[in-house]
Figure 1 (spheres, rainbow, N blue to C red):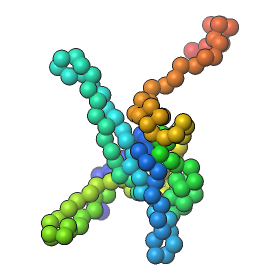
Figure 2 (figure 1 turned 45 degrees about the vertical axis):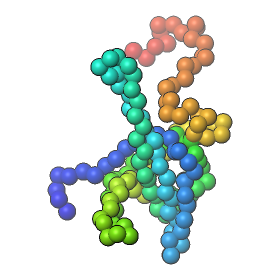
Figure 3 (figure 1 turned 30 degrees about the vertical axis):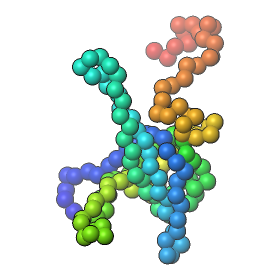
Figure 4 (figure 1 turned 90 degrees about the vertical axis):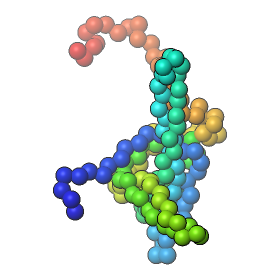
Length: 148
């Protein structure tokens, strides 16, 4: 093992579809799903551009069975921690193919930040992850109430 290297991925994004759950030959659960993250910027004309990146994610064992299968659905906002893994295979013509994705950490590899309320990804506002403003009444807050 090479010293001084790190393979760590952190994502916050939404699932584009329900996770696929399957079981290995020895009965261990495997969850596969894709998480959408977005990036926005202004181009040279000042127009806002946006790009969505889809990342394949895989979880194994208890994480897949106890957390992802019952709770994570299309549109769910999730926090993912894991490591990059690249798989290699050959297509029917013998050409090498590669696929890179994230393998979730066994413990704490996923946290559910929000559900897909309202029927899923499209109705959950796509990638709009801007915080909603609070309706809380702050008119009674005095300077003594502030922590700084």
